[in-house]
Amino acid sequence: MLAKEQRDESAVRSRLADAVQEVVDLQIDSGIDVINDGEYVKAGAAGAYAGYIQARVTGWERRTGEDAPPPKRGGTAERDRKLFPGFYESGLWMSGSGGPVRPGFATPGRPPAPPAVKVCVEPVRYVGHEAIAADITALQYALKGKDDDTEGFIASLGPLSLGAGAVNEHYSSEEEYLMAVAEVMREEYRAITDAGLIVQVDEPEFLTTWTFYPEWKVKDLRRYLEMAVEVINHSLEGIPLEQVRFHSCWGSGHRPHTTDVELRHVVDLLMGVNAQCYAIEGGNVRHAHEWRVWEDVDLPEAGW
Image 1 (cartoon, rainbow, N blue to C red):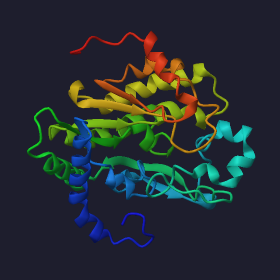
Image 2 (tube, rainbow, N blue to C red):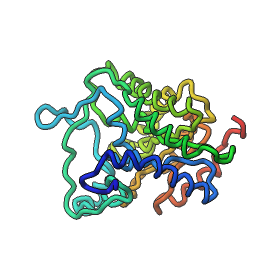
Image 3 (tube, rainbow, N blue to C red):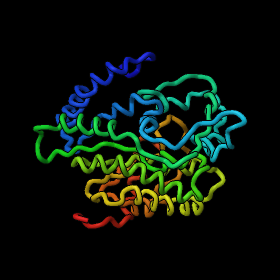
């Protein structure tokens, strides 16, 4: 239903509640006790995990041609692209990401250039209250009558992933701009946690930012992430620690990943995010060893 080129949106909406119920039941039957909604909203939005938020926020516009400012940074996997130009020209690297429903698609041929530059032109605002309320209701209904030890979480986009790639033409500084973006996302986080659910902040850019700036050294990334942690924590202000889990990753595109930043370079900064749980994806062979980093990290005592 979601994969159809001409989707029936009303049919998708009418099917959503049953689909959430089904995926919740499957998770419980598998022995999982921290359950999510299957992220069908995100699967149905352009850009998958990040596309859904575009209809829930305002303050940005997209420009093309002579009206567009220069891009703020390089594209996805900019570092790898310099080492494997033929692979990226082929378009096959898009397999596993970028499609409307993961695991996505593979279309030979050079990917089209981004059609527009995203620009912040006015105060950013969150306008997705009805949409997040529907997401919450669907998950709460699916969890009704389940074991008291079963918890529900909803994934919500991180402030860096929403705003860091856009050109700021409204706020007086980059820091002021990103803090405003954090306040926008806080509205969605608070809606989730006020409903008694856990929010998972999906912030791949904590680790993928390295790929956008091929000229950076590790010290440059760490300097940026110090500010980024302040932005993320600002987005979580007033939210109970025990209702927050933080996710980051190196992206799920089937590409070489040979230049991804190693977790050991930034794990101490990541631990500065005000979350009770951290979920770091190690789903490709370049990061199969990263779990060993935790052997050398002093974790807070249980009950923090």
